[in-house]
Length: 108
Ligand SMILES: [Zn+2]
Image (tube, protein in one colour):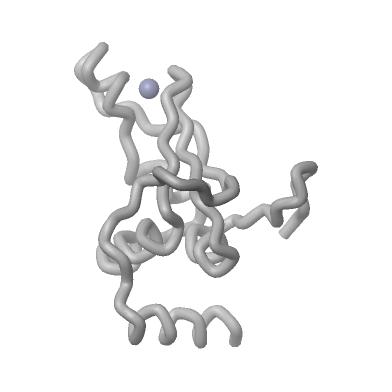
């Protein structure tokens, strides 16, 4: 864990970003990007059994703009934490029980 210059802690996993109430920014090489509500994104990964480390998670995304332009699914370059803001993409949220269980795992 490191601090970025804007004072945000730098998460390495989606779950970490969720615990800190950040958003997750997914960026493609074409410049297109999307911001996700971290807890809702984590919940999708959890249900699918996917590894939520930023390094591994890129394989589960593809850029709509690149797909529309070249007809191929292009994986994003990176995931990173950004401050939460209004308008981030919110997927289905984990229910209270699942979230608490994950928190317990995180702390131990
Ligand atoms: Zn793209």
